[in-house]
Length: 335
Length: 73
Image (cartoon, rainbow over all chains, first blue to last red; front, side):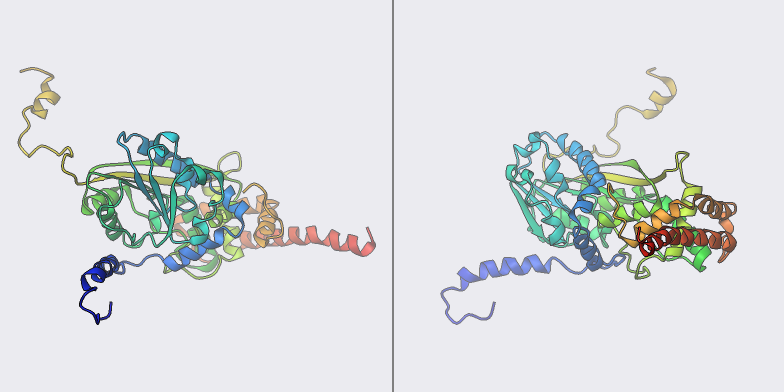
């Protein structure tokens, strides 16, 4: 806002200008850079160029959204305004059961790829739900403090560079005592593909380059959530094994999901035919099942955390326990 | 994916490799036999056999088509 010429409108105009300034000032660039977010945005946008392929590879995201919603359904209180961070094509919205959607006033879907976000905007489920689609980088969620009754995130957080920063931003935009429920790929996800490509590339070219992203481990997630200020944490792990006819089908599906390699240190360009052929041989020999299928493991880490609130149950102070664990474990109920 | 489109080069490669399963398996066995000690060209012979086979399948598919076209089938 430039200096104003008239004294009268100053208080009127300054207020909105300052709130805007605050919103942008709270979004500095993240410090750790592992993934190229620009590449990721392009991959997601390109993945819907063939809508049929893109929809055909929704199986993983649909399944995990369902499992996430299952956890959301355990919350009895009404959740009028939910944010879906990294929504993709709004998978969570599409599968939301009546129990939740009836009480919903607004569902905000955020994704950085406009094309992917609006892929299913014409479908029928949009008419029954108050969906708002916002194109923004989910790494720095552009919302005011205390604005959502719940934040969910399904299969998007494994592409975030600075998880501590994003998690504390999520904590900031949640209302007090509101839940954050997320599912992200982690740990040993796609270890079969990772090992086969490494061995194949080592034998064919004499070295390896990062083909599968580094992923967060279950052990790290608890610490990260705690650091971001979440309380009453629940973290659990689920393995989904999908069987593919060959390594080419697996990689074509990953591309159609928009989940191609976006590691900054990667070798740009496609994997050579020789390495692919070699990887097919190693994958089949090392991990292939008896019926000639290639299993691919997706390890999903679910996390639930609550923003600190007033009437939240809290752990009792140290030393306030009256029953000794030692007595119970050693002598049954003897007094 | 439900319907692979044969026009894409990756699908051509995939179907060619699928026809060479003995060679694929021989190459895989050679690597896995001692996968802690893999170095460049450790299984060169097996790989060349695999490549030869894939190339053979690709031309085997194309050749009759071209020949058929020439002979007016």
